[in-house]
Image (cartoon, rainbow, N blue to C red; front, side, top):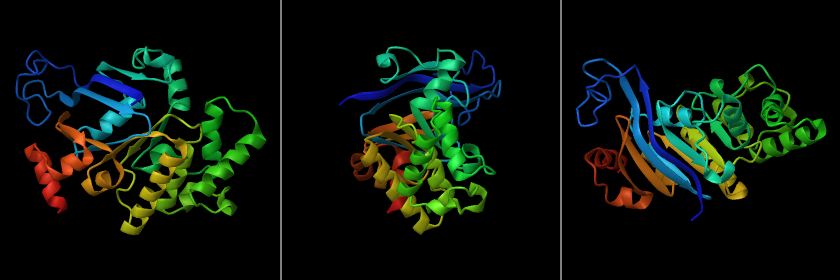
Length: 276
């Protein structure tokens, strides 16, 4: 399978760290150092994402799932580690090591992000069409007619009435806001889409609709997706492979069906049994 993204030994630490917690053999209190109180939100995490794959990331609150996604999208700096995208210089250059200008270009052209809280991904007082145009403009598009056509196309795919294209997302329901976010995230046909808890807080019927649209987007664009959730039912519905995170580390990984049917780690067993 063609590898689209690779992450090697990603670490995100809040605090300077000390000799005690920098030694991986020393135990922490969850992911906090008992001496210097530094928090190891993500520690030595390595993943691979393949073409047209949906990779699930599951774990309890505070396990590092969202930190992983925000580091990959350059919202927060990585303390250490490397990441590569095949569409960027053939996957030969570490995207964490390049300039902030290059990172903005990667973010605008090669990555899409859908946040749990739409306020982080949308300008709530701008029109829905304006939000999508913002992403297109950030990638260098200046053709107004083309942008209008692309905006209408995306909102139509997300089943948002085109007569609401000039309405701001603050007027929309939570489910519609997430659909506008997805439209914005895929505006430039990025090879990698990051979804962070996109169904949390939505009614069950709305959750199902959003998940159906995610599957539709993945098939139509042949895109690779990393989807984060604390809900194993969402992961089971969407993902081909799954990693299970606990206290900033991967404790189990494998094909989703395999993890569902025969979980090995005690934490994963608890998650699976809670689903039954």
